[in-house]
Amino acid sequence: MKKLIAVFMASLMCISLAACGSKGEEPTEAPAQTEAPADSEEPAEAEGAEAPEDNGEAAGDFTTVTEGVLTMGTNATFPPYEFYDGEEIVGIDAEIAGLLAEKLGLTLEIQDMDFTAIVTSVQTGKIDVGLAGMTVTEERLENVNFTNTYANGIQVVIVKEDSDIQSIDDLEGKLIGVQEGTTGHTFCADDYGEDSVVACTNGATAVQSLLTDKVDCVVIDKQPAISFVEANEGLKILDTEYANEDYAAAVSKDNDALLNALNTALDELIADGSIQAILDKYIKAE
Ligand code: ARG
Image (cartoon, rainbow, N blue to C red; front, side):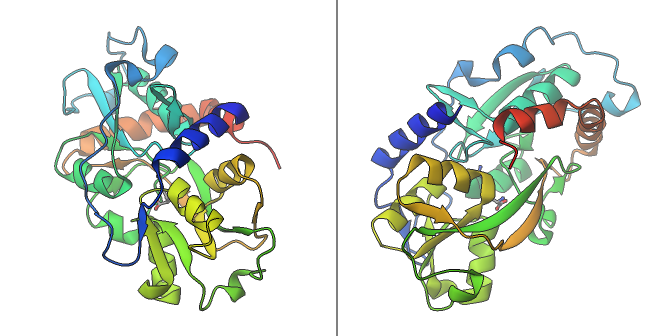
């Protein structure tokens, strides 16, 4: 797994230079990379699930964008939650979505897109669920519903090993790299001002900016941070945490039936230990 993520990181680094900008410079809602190929749905889990199981009333009458398919939008630059293994998007969210789809009697299809496009795509009915290590926030709740939470996320700070930044208290006046549209972006802009924040297309480009001294630190979710630090020499994660968050899947406000069906399925997968098993597969115990 480690090697896999390292390969992913290496390839991403090559294509991701100069993808950060200060406020307003970056293209925002750029259309998806949409290179998710037809075979990118979750492998084993999504197989043989055509015949809808009887999931009781909750799974009764939901509709999906494409009949028989659960269309998931994600931003696959976020190991170990979603990242590319060759042509295929894999990771915690992909596996969870595979199990959810199976429970709902659907085939999973994953679409890769900019993180900033996910909520809009749910809202406009382009995708059924946004599953992207996405934090439940008040702001997002104005536009979409969230399922029950399935994981915990923590915002952390990555610095160079020899950095003079030793804790959160030292961030004032520093340039902070973030992934555009993430909670790390919002929090840092609120706490330190937009001018202190350099918004990057993804976490890898933010880390690249740190390695080339274009920013002084990167604020990002802990598990991707661990992957990025493992894949690059000379970086470390500060001990102090910046924020503690809950991850959930975003669903359209107009599709309560799907939300209920997903919650029922998710609760079963939490109760029988399946979700924990997936988390344990990708996240090392500390
Ligand atoms: N948890 C953060 C948020 O919700 C970051 C998520 C980024 N996810 C991704 N797949 N790139 O804003």
